[in-house]
Length: 259
Ligand SMILES: CCCCCCCC(=O)SCCNC(=O)CCNC(=O)[C@H](O)C(C)(C)COP(=O)(O)OP(=O)(O)OC[C@H]1O[C@@H](n2cnc3c(N)ncnc32)[C@H](O)[C@@H]1OP(=O)(O)O
Image (cartoon, rainbow, N blue to C red):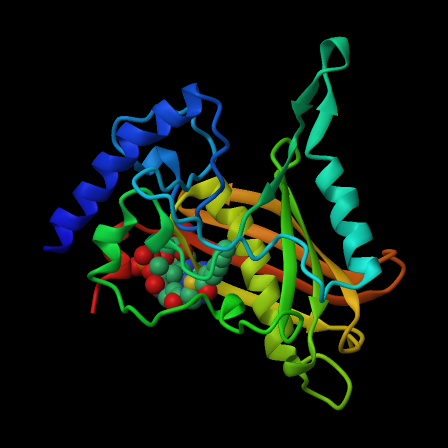
């Protein structure tokens, strides 16, 4: 049954993505999937792709601004968002090396043909960082990828439900956002991956409610292994809060369903 669901999903994606691309319909990104994993797509389709051509339903994109965002969060978001477009010939706007990653509260469910897969996955499952509906309460973040530099930046506002030491962010929440950003970069670079190792050094506390930047960059790729370095800094870059290294290992779809 799982094999049938996966092949239905791949088949639908292979048919729909090129058609949508031809019509210049922007395709947001889907964690855990990459076009190279989808039979029938060529390597021009570098980025992971998410679309929902079979329904008018649009899942909420959590990485768009909402009223809980502080002016500082908005300013940084706008700064990186503006980098996603650059001036081309004749003043025409073109896509730059930066990409804003949309973010949903489920991964596979909202993919092309993902409804097939969602039937074999837990209906109640939600992405850890996107499972609190109250805006501003927990993880507010938007990720941007630099495809040329193989790096990512995340603008992150830490909500009050993420408290660890009084008034400050919980170390596990910091590790979570680091895993998310380094993971997103690795998925972009390597397709389906899982975290094999995450090494975190906490240098200075992060006050709740503050806005920080999470920088991630590719260190090296060796066969199935992707090494990423990461720093969490204050929004102006002057203070280092956390440093981390992460190792991601490429896996196949079946690995995620081994029990
Ligand atoms: C947008 C949202 C993004 C969110 C991203 C979130 C990502 C996650 O949190 S994933 C969840 C947490 N991670 C997991 O559950 C993974 C659990 N672990 C596993 O599945 C397996 O151990 C796995 C896949 C990492 C490795 O197993 P396997 O496929 O058998 O490969 P294996 O041969 O053991 O290792 C492959 C290579 O990686 C190396 N390696 C594996 N684990 C480690 C490790 N912990 N430390 C260092 N090296 C390691 C091995 O030494 C080997 O290297 P080489 O090829 O040079 O010999």
